Length: 98
Image 1 (cartoon, rainbow, N blue to C red):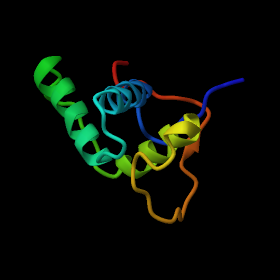
Image 2 (image 1 turned 30 degrees about the horizontal axis):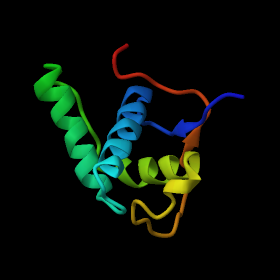
Image 3 (image 1 turned 90 degrees about the vertical axis):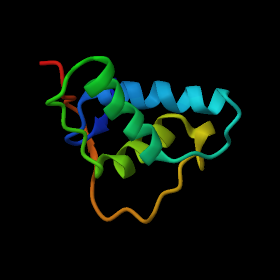
Image 4 (image 1 turned 180 degrees about the vertical axis):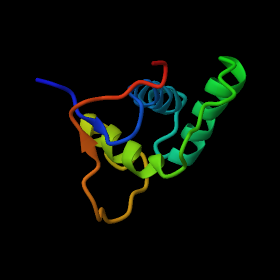
């Protein structure tokens, strides 16, 4: 079965979001800010990896939060979400390192 990812979000960003969310949870947080995780991803790409042209869209947070909690039902409620108004998952992932 092909894994689904949020539309327009590079697969690398999805994977790092997932990794960081689990890191935060393992640090003892039962709830956390998806915005904070995305800002950490921005730091990782732009500062640590030196990809200064990397664009990290703030609109990705809602889609990433839903994707993460759908993929990991035991993490339901870790991120606060609002009512969904559009389809956000894509079968064909994109990569930001292409």
